[in-house]
Image (cartoon, rainbow, N blue to C red; front, side):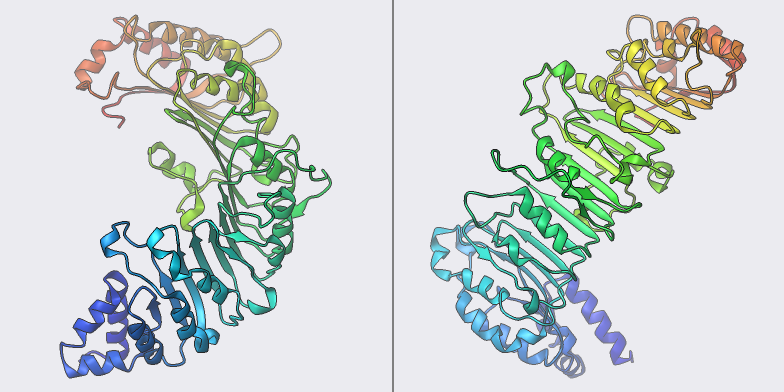
Length: 529
């Protein structure tokens, strides 16, 4: 009794979840009514799997009538017994009369399997070089040795383009209607100039309508002529700009682009320090990747909320102009949070996300100190929020004092000390003969693990002294939150055992703190909650 339109929509939704072709064949056997509806609905046949038998592909083309069609070819299972041999030239010939209807293409074309090299997958790429007037999006993943040339007049409606592993003629990309471009491990056809920065800038310059750009596995070539400093590519419509690679290569790209206000900038960095001969304790972190002038990158220039998050194998920096949903939801406290816009629908994403992948050596934790020393050089003194997470027992008072001096308008400060306390931090809060650090500081959050020696007594006593001096200097702290974490993940950590790890005179310390701040909160965390 359902209207046909509603029944078709249900069929379409179910076919998208299961193997659409198998499901449709079974559904047509339910009754004559279902069979007639499915057979006579072109929209149920216009998503065509090119891995199927050519006869079935021909059938789908006929039943889709004059509707737009989407072609897809997924990566096959690596098991050699179930690899299907494809006749790509025959498929291309079959599709030739339907070029004007092709609107979406999602293809995985690889000929690395020895048994498949006679399939001629290049024929499929030659089809993509033909005139496709209705094509709106193309996603292509290939193996080595396959090349592609795109022509503007042949692709008048192309808006989204994703290329991986293909050798492409950069000069063939004047596609001003593109709004989304993803390039992964893309190769320049001239063997002497693979990954040429000038070519990439030319691509961005000609595709000036881009809103989303992703470049992964960028490898610049040493010894090439440098791009002139005055060569700046403006991307006025950009919303999300993501690039990954080594710091040196990322710096080259960021130096020559200009993004509009509100654009999200994400960078993912590998091989940190690979090109440096410096001592790891003095290795530049921000300076290795960020241009000295940030006026063309509002995600850097307009920052008021900043976070430095160090964990094993990774150092991440988040920054925003406004306190967006990202900060309120605290999504960043989950270990699986990622800022890569690869799915195009990241729910919460800060204006700036920088992820450094670390080798996991013993000296990794020094990188946190290095980046803290550089913060004031790259972020505005009008910073309001600062959150720092990492191993804090190596961050000396001098480093903390430099951070607080760089951001005198700080209102919210959260320090999360990983596997230790922060005994050197409180002294940096003390007023000096010339100034009081962060006079407008309103809320301070300190999360730490009580150590075996004194349960954090040295830190707590130093905190009492610092807050007493600030109170006398008329810079009283409004809110203080002390959050005590489990010592190890494997330890059964209950409120009673938490209390036993605190200093014996903690109650006296708590009474002092209650006098020195307007609001005191003491939290004993269990499993991080």
